[in-house]
Image (tube, rainbow, N blue to C red):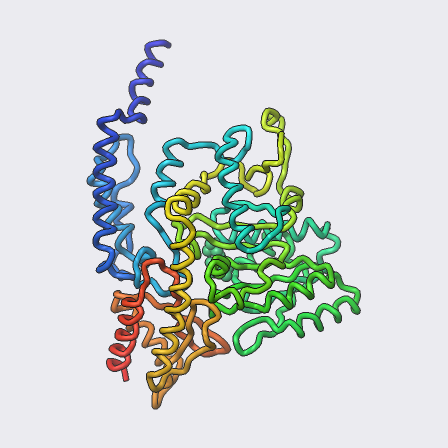
Length: 478
Ligand SMILES: *Cc1c(COP(=O)(O)O)cnc(C)c1O
């Protein structure tokens, strides 16, 4: 048996490269990363390819390993080439994500040391670091010290956790669902509707409050709807608003909604996945007034803080509400009982073992300070306004509402022919060109093109280039 164990040990030891092997691996991987970053200025924002990454299957997992150069080649051709390039300065579609380099270094360290950030007993420092990030976000939105939260994988899970807290705080039981009411607008992100279903609230009454011309919830109609529901014996228990909708970047009237929610003692959940971090920027302060009013709020560091994908956050004004929904006691966890006020992700979210996400956020914030993040967000707001003004000067464009944040919507009205078909063609031509990526949506049956400025690499030159490319494609298809 000893001989067999020793034989297996020899093979197992290949899982632990020595210092020399690590150095070589690191250098080759670093060269790849440098190649990517140094070419980024000219890499396409979207790449249409024949195989769409299918070549990945040509090299299945087998008993024997391969060399790193071959694997990076497979990665480059099949993963880092086809489709959207979220690292590109020309990514102006959907809601762009981030990918700052300092976070990659944080992830590297988190993976190497592999601290267990789910439980305080296991890694008190990692838990404190994540709580510190949660507290910092609470502070910038103006939450009280009683607030708590969790770093999630993204906005969808953050919405799920927030809506779960709303359900449990209201003590809703299955027998109450059919008479309980949730209010939102039809501009709410689809992850909200998904979360409602997942937490079992699909049978609740869901009211879609009409929006104004700028796609913001009409708070007077919200109030009227609540009053009517109360009169009819229903149980209004949850209002969901948006600070930056995905379609148009619209911000609902947070102060007024907050007032209505607190008057009626209804849980107010705010989806600020896209718009939340704009509280750092002076010129968004007015539009985001009241952002401290919700009972729960979500924001995506992988959007507004320019972190790589895999970073969302949920904040809850009274952290005991999170604990109520998520804490659990297990026999095998008996050494890990909560021994101070430092709550851990394992008690505040559905997760237990998890990526130590705090480090990818703490490292860049501490290294660079908050100022460059604040300034970059302010820059994005101004770039959106600049684009709006520049495009309005070109005859034929019908502009959407003046941007609340950094999304601009527009369409072109051609002298003849179908307007929707024309704009579909226009956005298609822009995408096929590959230098930029703009996306589209449909609002009241109209095909609308949208530009979302949130990549930290998008600056004035890219916006000028965008206007040039739009003009070029117009000339081509007119
Ligand atoms: C991006 C987004 C979400 C979903 O967040 P993910 O991080 O993609 O899961 C939810 N709501 C809004 C408004 C968003 O922009």
